[in-house]
Length: 149
Image (tube, rainbow, N blue to C red; front, side, top):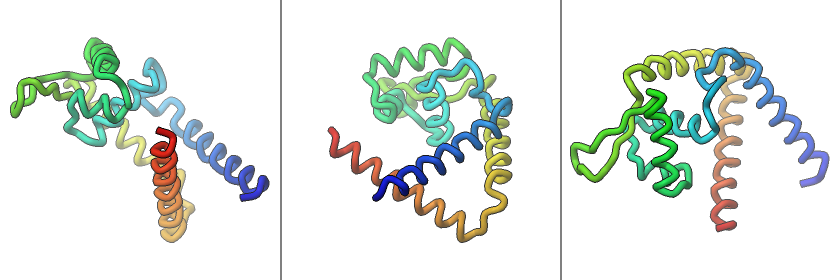
């Protein structure tokens, strides 16, 4: 790949990221007071629904101790709750607190609306192509991170 192509891809990615940031400014529950790992934790739990402390540590590539500290902070802030698994008392399950769950639900509705607005001018074919490109890049990222380990 030549330098001009690399620069073109970098410019396109930066433009997309800037568009996302501008569209979500003031609309996201993550605008303030969330570290990157806290945000990633909340998004992972929202995506997976049923998450254990061990799952979270593996997903974030953290030690059990670091994952526990992260979760402790989110529990103290009334964002997460932790409970023993009904299947195995040694397993700690994580969920959104009763206070935070409606905020996350509202965030997801706003997020979906903003995605629709940002991509409204794309045809179905362009959206399919974008999705395929994103999957290829994500797959390459997994391959490269495996090679580095």
